[in-house]
Image (cartoon, rainbow, N blue to C red; front, top):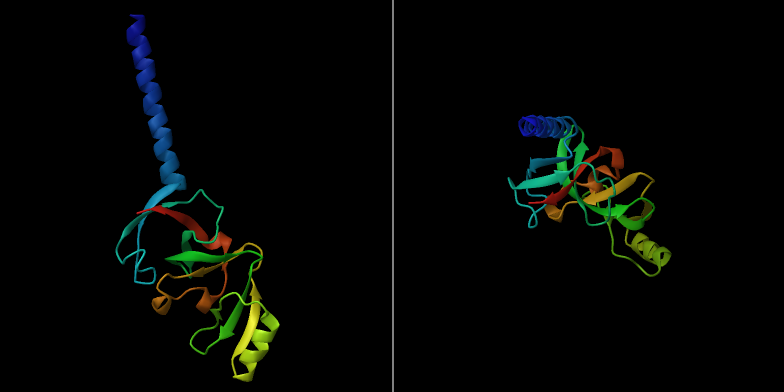
Length: 161
Protein backbone atom coordinates (compact mmCIF):
# COMPACT_ATOMS: atom_id res chain seq x y z
CA UNK A 1 0.00 0.00 0.00
CA UNK A 2 2.80 2.42 0.90
CA UNK A 3 4.70 1.73 -2.31
CA UNK A 4 1.65 2.60 -4.41
CA UNK A 5 1.30 5.94 -2.58
CA UNK A 6 5.02 6.68 -2.99
CA UNK A 7 4.85 5.97 -6.73
CA UNK A 8 1.86 8.29 -7.07
CA UNK A 9 3.70 11.08 -5.17
CA UNK A 10 6.81 10.66 -7.33
CA UNK A 11 4.72 10.64 -10.53
CA UNK A 12 2.89 13.81 -9.44
CA UNK A 13 6.19 15.47 -8.50
CA UNK A 14 7.67 14.70 -11.92
CA UNK A 15 4.56 16.07 -13.65
CA UNK A 16 4.74 19.29 -11.61
CA UNK A 17 8.47 19.65 -12.41
CA UNK A 18 7.81 19.22 -16.15
CA UNK A 19 4.95 21.73 -15.99
CA UNK A 20 7.17 24.32 -14.23
CA UNK A 21 9.97 23.71 -16.74
CA UNK A 22 7.52 24.17 -19.64
CA UNK A 23 6.27 27.44 -18.10
CA UNK A 24 9.83 28.73 -17.78
CA UNK A 25 10.54 27.97 -21.45
CA UNK A 26 7.28 29.57 -22.60
CA UNK A 27 7.63 32.70 -20.44
CA UNK A 28 11.39 33.36 -20.57
CA UNK A 29 12.46 31.55 -23.77
CA UNK A 30 15.98 30.82 -22.46
CA UNK A 31 16.73 28.73 -25.55
CA UNK A 32 14.85 29.12 -28.80
CA UNK A 33 15.11 28.35 -32.50
CA UNK A 34 15.26 31.06 -35.15
CA UNK A 35 15.81 31.27 -38.88
CA UNK A 36 18.56 33.15 -40.73
CA UNK A 37 17.02 35.69 -43.10
CA UNK A 38 19.08 37.05 -46.00
CA UNK A 39 22.68 36.56 -47.09
CA UNK A 40 24.47 39.01 -44.77
CA UNK A 41 26.05 36.21 -42.69
CA UNK A 42 27.20 33.94 -45.54
CA UNK A 43 29.31 31.85 -45.89
CA UNK A 44 29.03 30.94 -42.19
CA UNK A 45 25.22 31.09 -41.91
CA UNK A 46 23.18 30.56 -45.07
CA UNK A 47 19.77 32.07 -45.77
CA UNK A 48 16.89 30.04 -44.30
CA UNK A 49 19.22 28.05 -42.00
CA UNK A 50 17.83 27.16 -38.60
CA UNK A 51 19.94 28.17 -35.56
CA UNK A 52 19.63 27.79 -31.79
CA UNK A 53 19.89 30.88 -29.58
CA UNK A 54 20.45 31.39 -25.84
CA UNK A 55 18.77 34.46 -24.33
CA UNK A 56 20.26 34.01 -20.85
CA UNK A 57 23.96 34.48 -21.70
CA UNK A 58 24.50 38.27 -21.54
CA UNK A 59 28.32 38.16 -21.68
CA UNK A 60 29.07 39.27 -25.26
CA UNK A 61 32.59 38.89 -26.62
CA UNK A 62 34.21 39.73 -29.94
CA UNK A 63 33.29 36.96 -32.38
CA UNK A 64 29.93 36.07 -30.82
CA UNK A 65 27.02 35.83 -33.26
CA UNK A 66 23.95 37.53 -31.82
CA UNK A 67 20.25 38.15 -32.53
CA UNK A 68 19.50 41.89 -32.40
CA UNK A 69 16.22 43.77 -32.30
CA UNK A 70 16.98 46.51 -34.85
CA UNK A 71 14.00 48.78 -35.54
CA UNK A 72 11.50 46.03 -34.57
CA UNK A 73 13.19 43.54 -36.91
CA UNK A 74 15.36 40.66 -35.70
CA UNK A 75 18.75 40.47 -37.42
CA UNK A 76 21.75 38.21 -36.92
CA UNK A 77 25.24 39.76 -36.82
CA UNK A 78 28.70 39.12 -35.36
CA UNK A 79 30.12 41.22 -32.51
CA UNK A 80 33.25 42.94 -33.88
CA UNK A 81 34.04 45.39 -31.05
CA UNK A 82 32.80 45.74 -27.47
CA UNK A 83 32.44 48.61 -24.99
CA UNK A 84 35.58 50.72 -24.61
CA UNK A 85 37.36 49.40 -27.70
CA UNK A 86 38.55 51.94 -30.26
CA UNK A 87 38.60 51.60 -34.01
CA UNK A 88 39.76 53.84 -36.81
CA UNK A 89 37.00 54.52 -39.33
CA UNK A 90 37.05 56.06 -42.78
CA UNK A 91 34.06 57.65 -44.50
CA UNK A 92 34.28 56.13 -47.97
CA UNK A 93 30.98 57.55 -49.19
CA UNK A 94 29.30 54.13 -49.48
CA UNK A 95 28.33 53.77 -45.84
CA UNK A 96 28.38 55.91 -42.77
CA UNK A 97 31.84 54.58 -41.83
CA UNK A 98 33.98 51.51 -42.29
CA UNK A 99 36.46 50.08 -39.78
CA UNK A 100 40.08 49.98 -40.85
CA UNK A 101 42.80 47.56 -39.75
CA UNK A 102 44.86 48.40 -36.67
CA UNK A 103 47.37 51.13 -37.48
CA UNK A 104 50.65 51.74 -35.62
CA UNK A 105 50.52 55.56 -35.89
CA UNK A 106 46.85 56.49 -35.98
CA UNK A 107 47.27 60.27 -36.13
CA UNK A 108 49.73 60.11 -39.02
CA UNK A 109 47.47 57.72 -40.95
CA UNK A 110 44.43 59.97 -40.41
CA UNK A 111 46.43 62.96 -41.72
CA UNK A 112 47.59 60.95 -44.75
CA UNK A 113 44.04 59.91 -45.57
CA UNK A 114 42.91 63.54 -45.22
CA UNK A 115 45.43 64.56 -47.92
CA UNK A 116 43.51 62.30 -50.31
CA UNK A 117 40.12 63.68 -49.27
CA UNK A 118 39.16 60.73 -47.06
CA UNK A 119 37.64 61.69 -43.73
CA UNK A 120 38.95 59.30 -41.04
CA UNK A 121 38.32 59.33 -37.31
CA UNK A 122 38.64 57.22 -34.17
CA UNK A 123 35.41 55.73 -32.85
CA UNK A 124 35.28 54.51 -29.25
CA UNK A 125 32.46 52.06 -28.57
CA UNK A 126 30.34 53.53 -25.73
CA UNK A 127 29.64 51.68 -22.49
CA UNK A 128 26.84 49.10 -22.84
CA UNK A 129 27.16 49.05 -26.65
CA UNK A 130 28.72 46.71 -29.22
CA UNK A 131 29.75 47.19 -32.85
CA UNK A 132 28.41 44.43 -35.10
CA UNK A 133 29.28 43.34 -38.62
CA UNK A 134 27.83 40.84 -41.06
CA UNK A 135 30.16 38.10 -42.31
CA UNK A 136 29.23 38.93 -45.92
CA UNK A 137 30.58 42.48 -45.85
CA UNK A 138 29.28 43.59 -49.25
CA UNK A 139 25.71 42.44 -48.54
CA UNK A 140 25.35 43.42 -44.89
CA UNK A 141 23.65 46.35 -43.23
CA UNK A 142 25.34 46.52 -39.87
CA UNK A 143 27.07 48.96 -37.50
CA UNK A 144 28.78 50.56 -40.48
CA UNK A 145 25.31 51.81 -41.42
CA UNK A 146 23.43 52.21 -38.13
CA UNK A 147 26.31 52.61 -35.66
CA UNK A 148 27.00 50.77 -32.40
CA UNK A 149 24.12 48.71 -30.98
CA UNK A 150 22.91 48.99 -27.37
CA UNK A 151 23.43 45.72 -25.50
CA UNK A 152 19.80 45.93 -24.35
CA UNK A 153 18.80 45.40 -28.01
CA UNK A 154 20.62 42.05 -28.16
CA UNK A 155 18.02 39.36 -27.59
CA UNK A 156 20.18 36.24 -27.72
CA UNK A 157 23.50 34.64 -28.60
CA UNK A 158 23.62 31.97 -31.31
CA UNK A 159 24.77 28.68 -29.76
CA UNK A 160 24.48 26.23 -32.64
CA UNK A 161 23.06 25.25 -35.97
